[in-house]
Length: 184
Image (cartoon, rainbow, N blue to C red):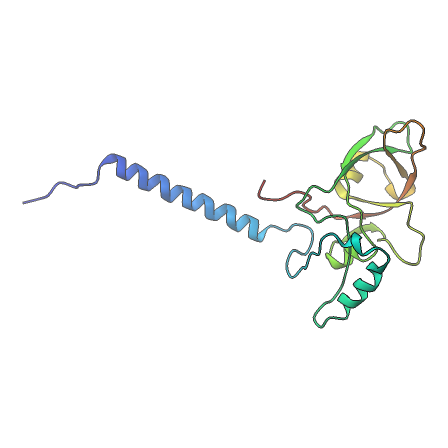
């Protein structure tokens, strides 16, 4: 005597849905794990609120650098994947429209520490007075449309009418990197 299959169409549909969902979840998990973010994401130590160290911050970085296994120390006012800040930049070319862009304030070692690649120009350096210099990413450089972005400057508009916006010389173009979390 043959028995009738006890699996109902609802159970089969539910199992199919669960297997498809699991396959999609694993695909997304692999994407997040394997995605080239444009910076090194492994073996990083992030220490927050270091501004409270004040003038002792440089000595703190030297002490961290002296720890066995530490290869480099860089600092920034945030890390990629978090909201970092934004500003409106006005190009020195009046024909080029303003650009709203995310910003990240970094020190001279940050790009090297994060293994971010300079694709044109140079990184910040102790050999230069870079206090009025800026590095853009490839997308910002393309959006601005400059044939040679390294001969241009941008002013950061802060909206105060009584304050002259500083002009920042573009000294380098960094490869695009993932500015936002992949989880959002």
